[in-house]
Image (cartoon, rainbow, N blue to C red; front, side, top):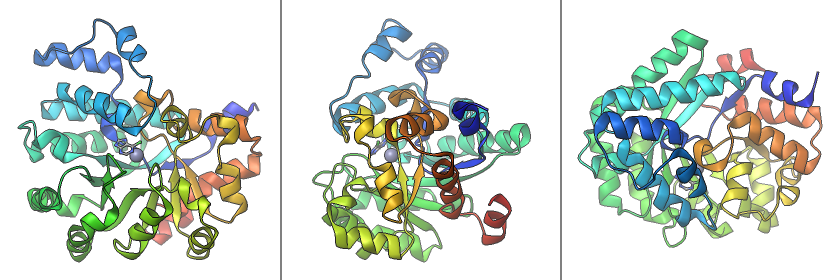
Length: 326
Ligand code: ES4
Ligand code: ZN
C-alpha cells in the first residue's frame, strides 16, 4: 500500500474546518450565477490566482468577500454537502465544523437560514456516508464582545444543535481576554469552548485562552512551542491542538513544510491533530494535509496513526463513541 493510500484509508476526525473556507471557486461561480451576485473575478483560474497570501489578514479579506455568494438555505446546504463528500473520500468519519454566523448576519442573512442549511447538509452526510458531525459557532474576534453576545442570543433556538463556540478571524490585537464574558455565558449554556490562539499571536494569547476562556481545545497553538513552560503544561493537561499544516504554509506561519513543527509537537507529548482549516483556499483537504506534513517531516505510519487517534481523543464525541473509533 502506498503512503498516500494509507493516509486516505486511515479513519480520522476533522476538528478544525471553517465551512465557509471549503467554498471551492467552481461552487462560488455557480452560486454567484444562481443568486445573481456579482463577483470580482472573471474565471475560476482568476480566483485561484488571487489565493496568494502573505499573512492571515490577506486571506481573511478574500475569504469574507467569497462568502458573499452564500445567500439561501440551499446554498449553505450545498456548501456543506460538497465538503462532507470530499472529507468522506479522505477517510473522515466524524467532522466538527465551524461556521461564522456574523459573516452572514452582517449581510442581512438570517441566522436560521445559515444554520438550517448546515444542519440539512449534516443530515445528508450521515445518510450518504454514515459520517457524524457537530457544529461549532465561531465568534469573529475583530468585532466587539457585544456583537458576540448578540450572536449567542440569535443562536438560542438552536443551542441544542450547537456543540461548541469558537473564536476566529484576525488574531493580533484581539486577545482572548476580549471575549471572557461571552465564553463564560456559552459555558453556562453547556457549550464546549475552543479558540484560535498562537497562530499569529504570541504565547500570552494561548495562556489567556486557557486561563481566561477555559477552552476545551486549542485551534492552531503553534506559537506555544516558543514557551517551554506552556508546552509542558499543554502536554501535562492533554490539551488537543488542531494543527493545519497547509494553512500554516499558505499564511506564512511556517516558511517551508520542512520546517513545520508537527513532529516536534508529537515528540513534546502534545495531543496534536492534523486538519484542513480552509481547504478551498489553502490547497488541500485533510488527507493532503497529512501527506504534506508526512513528506515535509518524514512522519512514520505510527506517527500518522497517532495523529488520527488524537483526532478522536480530542473530539467532543462521548467517551464510549471515542473508544469505538480507537
Ligand atoms: C481562519 Cl486560518 C484562520 N485563522 C483565523 N480565522 C479564520 N477564519 C477562517 N480561517
Ligand atoms: Zn481556523
